Every structure is written in structure tokens, then in C-alpha cells.
Image 1 (cartoon, helix red, strand yellow):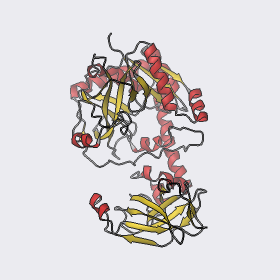
Image 2: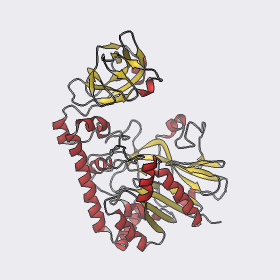
Image 3: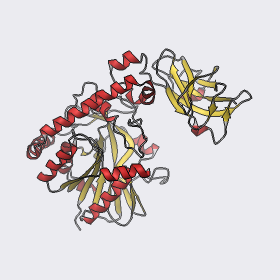
Image 4: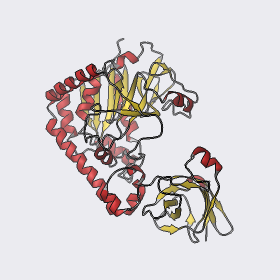
Length: 456
């Protein structure tokens, strides 16, 4: 039976990207595309109506009811949507399905090889995974530029994204891979280096030793994760989390800031003739679907959302404490004026929470290489009240210096819990460089081990 590959996605306020994302994946060989729009207030629905009217292999649904039902039940919307999309693709006669977000682009290095070329005919191969290439942010990148326009550099990540053969061996489709009862997994064209299946979430990421030996060169095909794009788009994206309940935060906290990670930075050099053909085909696609005005409207919506994120953070110091890390290296004069010294980088870890005769103490290590070595500590209780720490003792930590050569010799700390504060699962340890106006926080719940500590 010939292979037919469908690409599936869920999308929330992704109007600036939908048309180009669909075009890209049709161009690289996916036979069909289906997008489930949810929780959106931009022009996403109108854009998908136009695209699906022009291209029969493209479809979409508005699934707000499924989103709300998932929130009320406390169930993971993405998993439920992916399961239904997989079943729907199989009923339609597709043999394989891939699952990507709207900031992810399956990308062959020659920009010509089809996704079909990486899916073997052998039925035993039922999961084919591709490395994640994170885009390296640049403060000079124009807002809402096409992801393949201009200079593109990436850093490989241990996570992968996968295409799954649709048969009765699939137990569950997950964001990065699929759980299966049997079968062979590939990483691009080679056997997947799956040494400890349980620890790796069934192949969601490659082992550390494999990643260390391969992170300095791009594979034949990978998934570009355009998580940063421009600063405007990055800040705007912080306002659209994947919620699991009606009480979840409106903001993402799982970003590392607008900066490159440690590790090799790899240039993506697409062949100029193939890129020229790609861009000409994109122009024809955009003319056929006629969505430029709708895309412009969605772009304005996202730009406004980025501005509102900064305004919200300026108005709410508690929110700033929660999202400071994801705003790292974002250039925003309003934040600098409101929170002097906010953009520091803190490396730290809590080792233990122990009861003492006087009450309790927290031990660990901490340092800020970007803001000097003087730190102050505090606590925030489950009700949100700030407690200033008792005496802080610093101590040598050779183990920390071995891993972080930039750390001072005395990066270890012992902090006494303030009298009257009962440490429980909702208590946060706070730290910041002396002179900064914004705390960083770490939960203590993982170190309590069920014990009741604190002062009466």
C-alpha cells in the first residue's frame, strides 16, 4: 500500500503563521494537513477557511468545546486532540501522521527531499523521529519575517519530533513521539538510540551520550523549532500557554529567555536554487489563498499582545517574579525603569530542607555570574506573603565550581527559616543579587519528603 502522510496540529492565535506553515509542509511532501483551532481571538479561523477552500487536502476544525471540556475535567487537551486527529487520519486512509506545533517546521537540508523519502516501506518501522533544532534569537531579526528568510542558525536539542505509522500498535500519541506496543524506531534514517525506554518517555529525546556526540552537526532533516523568531513574537508567545485547568496561569514559564543556549551554534545553509523555487511557490500559494489582509490583522493582534505582556509585568511585581526568567535578555526600557537590576542570571539549587532545634534550615548553592556574587535570600509562603530570611552562612562548594567554573568558591549556603513561617508544599525559597528589585523563586516541595518543618 502506498504511503500517505498527514500533518496534524492544534493552533491558538497563530494567524500570522498559519498560511505559511501549511504551504511549507505541503511543499516538503505531506499529503494532507489538518489544523484544529482552539481558544483563538485573531483571524485564524478566516485564514483556515480560505486555505482549505483553495486546497482540498487541507482541513480544519474549531474545537473550543473540546478545549473547555478538557479544562473542566483537568485533562490534557493536547493529548486528547492528538488521539482524535490520529484516528481521523487513519479513517481517511492515511498510513502515517506527524504532529507539530505552529512554530515547528519539518525541514530537509536540501529543501527538496520529501518526507516520504524518510518513511521506509517496511511495516516494522512505525516511528521515525527527527532532531529538534532551536532557532537562535537575534535582536536584529525583523518581526514576523518568514522563518527561512535571512540568516538562520540553530542549536540542536535532545528532544525529537516524530512521524507515526497509524496501526494497532499505537498506544498513545504524545507531543514528541508515540507510545507503541512493538516496532522499530528510527532517528532520521538510523536506529533510534533508545537505551532506557522508560526514562526517555518512549523516545521523546535521545540519550545524553548520543546527543553529546552529534550536537555539532545538522542531520539530513530536522524539525526547526522557531520558538524565538523576533523579540516581539517571542514576548507575544508568552501569553498563550497550553492550559490544563481553568485556574492555570495565562503565561508560559517554560522558556529560557531570549538568548542562545550553551553549545554549538549551527548555520542552516539552504541551497539557493531550491530556496528561490520555494519562495516563488510561496508567493503563488499566498496569491491563491488571498489571506494577506487577514494575516496583517493577526500580526497586529500578536504585536498588541506583546505590548500587553510588558504592561502587565510592569503593573504587577508578583507576575514579574514568576516570569522574570522567560524574559531574560528581552530589551524593554519599561522593565528596566520599573525593576532596576531585574535581568540577572541565577544558577542555584536546593539540596535539603532540615528541621533544627531552632526551627528549620534550607541548604544548597547559588551564584549570579552576571551580577556579582552578593545574594540575599527570602521566602514566600503559600498565601503569597514575603518573609525575609534569617542569618545566611556561605560555604565552599568545590563540586559546584567543578561544573560551573564561573562560580565563586563559597557558593554554598545555609539559610534559617524565619520564626513563625511553617514550611510546606507551597513555600518558595527566594534569592536575588543585592540591589536587584526582583526575586527568583524555587519551590521547596521536592525537598520536604513529607515532613512537617518550621517554627511554631
